[in-house]
Image (cartoon, rainbow, N blue to C red):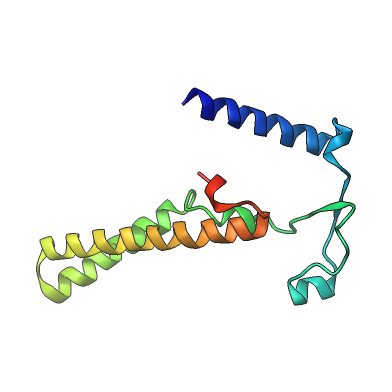
Length: 131
């Protein structure tokens, strides 16, 4: 556990230094906006071999919607509605509870897999580093 904490702090400090341009060994980068053609093709059209690039995200929703945090009300409303519909259809509250539980776990599993993969692709971070 201490080794993981030490590695986390070292990686965090390296990324801070990289973004603040403290260490000249870290390399150069520039912050740019995507142009229309790059947005349409969903790919970079400039050479990033010598100078790295950070892309500005035009909407905060692209990153923040990758998490279920903040969407608890919608998720709870969906679960309650699903419970009521299943209970009305089968007239069995135990079955409805188990069904809603399984559907909720399935939704959480799908979002975890999808958003972790999406975050790994968009940030160019190996998914093993995402906790």
